[in-house]
Length: 118
Image (tube, rainbow, N blue to C red; front, side):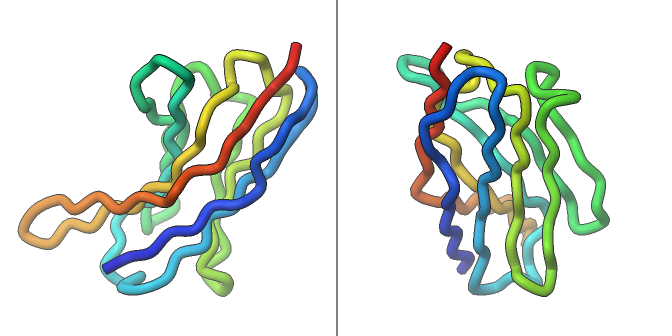
């Protein structure tokens, strides 16, 4: 089992920055990939950024150059630094962890709200 707790959301103006944090606990050794997904009102959840155990990162085209995913293994925490925020970045941001043991298991945090006013 893996537990994920997000923090750092809030209300900001367009052009400002926020940093989200995801603290991971439980069977951390089994995690293959950790990432951030977001869900805007009335829309499906979509990928924002992921980072593998090896440190490889992947970003949605809409956030490339503005968002940076990173992790601090000593703190068991994954971060999402979001710069130059836009109104369309508004949504609930969810931390995700993928475990691959015989099959894929997805674990999710409770989500944190990010609101960007224009």
